[in-house]
Image 1 (cartoon, one colour):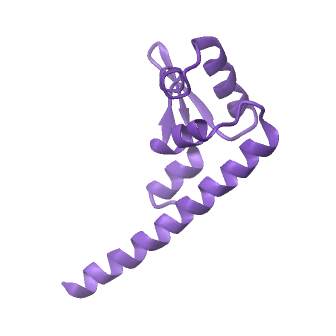
Image 2 (cartoon, one colour; image 1 turned 45 degrees about the horizontal axis):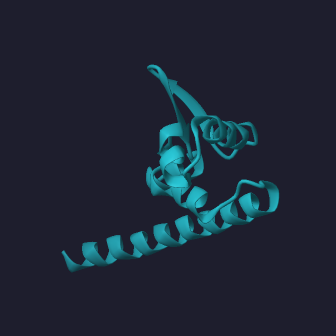
Length: 104
C-alpha cells in the first residue's frame, strides 16, 4: 500500500512540474505576442482545461466583444481549440487537457 502511495506521489510531482512548465511557456508566448496579456488571462486559461467568453468577461473585467476577440485570436494562433456546444463556444487548452488526461 505504501509503495502505491509513493508511486502516485511521484507521478503527481511530475504532473505538477509539467503543468508549471506549460504555464511558463504560455506566459512567455502571451507576454511577447499579445497586447492583451495579463496575469488574469493566464490564470483563466489554466484554472480549468477550458474557458468561455463569459469566464473571460468576469475574470478580466472586459465586455463580450473584447473577450471573444481575445479567445478567437488565441484559437487562430493554435493556443486554444474552439468547440461549439449547444449555443455556446468552449475554448479548450488542449495541451493542458492532454496533461490532465495522462496523454502528455
